[in-house]
Amino acid sequence: MLSPLRGLKIIYSFFCGLMPAAIGCRRFATLGATKPVRLASVAQQKLAALCLFFSLQTLTAIGGEPGTKNDELGTETIFRPKAGEFPPIEKAHAYRGELVFVDHANRRGSIRIQGAGMYFRNKPHPFAMLPYGMVRYQGAPADLRDIPLGTVLHVRGFLPPDPKTSSVPVLRIDSKNRTHGYSGKGITPAENHVLLLEDEPSHCLREGLVWKLKELNIQNKQGAIVARRVSKAGGESQAAEEEMTFDAATRIWRGRECLSIQDLVDEGIWPASGKKTLEGHTVQLGVTWKPTPGSIFTRFHISDIWLDEISLQRAAANQNETHKAFIRSRWMPAFVDAVEYGKFGTATVTATLFGGMDDSLYSDFKKGTSTVMNAVESNLKHTHGAYGPAHMACKGPILDVIKKEGEAPLGSSGIQIQFKTDLVIEGIRPGRVVRVRASNWPAVNVPREEYLNGAGVEERFPTPAIFPKY
Image 1 (tube, rainbow, N blue to C red):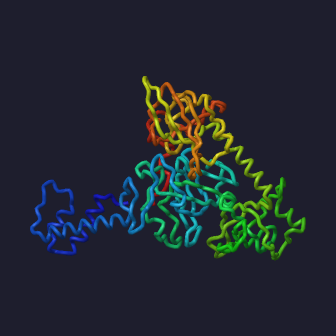
Image 2: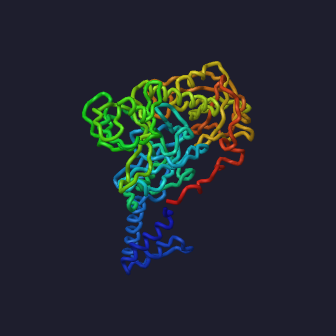
Image 3: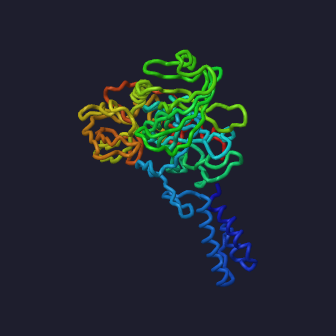
């Protein structure tokens, strides 16, 4: 990406070079002269002003250096989240792709995004979770570490709130519209800071969708299924049919059973070979990607089939318990809304707990109980304490728990806690992110890679250099 200084130099020189008479404008374009340049005429002054106008317009169109407020791309307003606020999901950019790399300690990774061209040629695209960004797997809350590589995910992403502190590469604002050879468009969106990351069944449950199976073609316990996403409530579907592969490793879930392809063949539900019409049977699918033989460049693979609601509810319940145990050991993340400072380091802190988690976690924060709060970075890594999160954390009672009226925006629980401490630490300020531990949660030490060791808020492990340059 061009810096504003270099961009202005290049564009000024280009425009002014079109007019031989604009010598003064060409000299003005250097911007580095130590002495003031006196233009020879009023005409040259007007030409210089015209060069400046077109240069700023062009820099804006190509992305330039994003400002602190919303950026302009032509006539389109580009939304950028603000610190301390939950952005509306309606303004997010949506895309879909395969998870190919995870740095779970820093809440980031890479996705091979489905675009307009050959899928297997698409380079992995880095993403970072927003601090309040939610991950969902098999219909339940999750952490990045819970999702197997290869899982196809639905993404709702935004531009980086602050490009200067982004833990993944910052791209041109119009990157999603650029063409990348055989890969086509859409594979490198600049909206790589994620509000919602969800696998196929989680996406369908949230949107009220199911997969309707149309046709099966099987040979030697592998083959392809033609299916389409439709509304669970009925009505016409606008979604196109998709042909996806399956094989002997595909898991079939029915009630409390985990079946194999051979089990369905033995029961006479599927044939051993050939085609069969599936009569629109509705299911939920787990979708991954595997290399496909022949000249097929974009075809996804079915990892799981949930034949009924009971089977998916059991999968969601298991994942939910995994996530509950994770949050109790790493603490609940929250935004600091306000801090009222008292004397000698005392303070009353109001914070909004992040959303998307099991209700039992929120119910553990009760008025009159004690709690512990520690400052964290945007990747939710604890920033204070050489021996773990509780080393330098603030302690004190919960004065009040407030449930906001109306529907909370995605990423927020709509629940505020007011907490009083007798010694507030530096990182607890309005707009900053914290983690809070309820009194009945275990006091454990987290792994070394999940907290900073007093080396400053810029400490990262590993550095953004692990990602390729785009």
